[in-house]
Image (tube, rainbow, N blue to C red; front, side, top):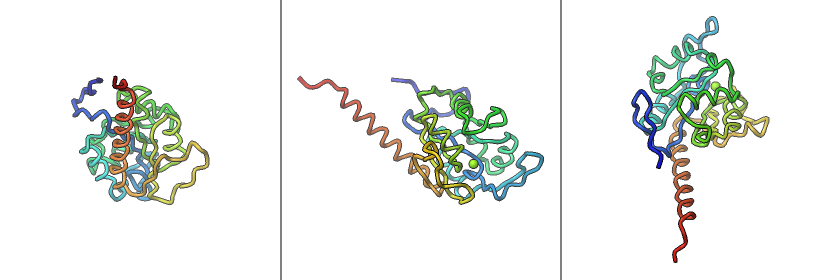
Length: 203
Ligand SMILES: [Mg+2]
């Protein structure tokens, strides 16, 4: 029986079967149409309706939550600190530091490394993002569960490649936690069925 992980910040250990949530920022948490840019940095922007509550609910439910976003750390501080969402992320993986953008596997591997996950843990990771070519394709190629946050028509909702087909689509942040509960439930059922199948036949 594997022991629950404990990291250096002594966060409460998440139940092993709870999906680990990787969140994009632009048009997933923040309404890009409200962003104010200067010299390559996003100075400010408004969270999408329900985004803050979604992150708070995920953390309260025991999910490990990490940011996996293209851009500079300073931008994400500016965007996410005023609401307090910034501090809810266990780790932050920004393309400016990784020097590669999604869908590069380096971004997803960096995020998994930051969470002290092994490659086989990818199947327990849920990537939530608005961009089919970046968030969804990148997650799918890693073997992660992909969730398309399709709240805005600013980005294509039509996959142009089989890799861009999301496992799930939501249009409201409030849909994510119930979706994850369903995933955790089905995973537990699968594990249970596997145990039953492995039990030796009665003599
Ligand atoms: Mg985005």
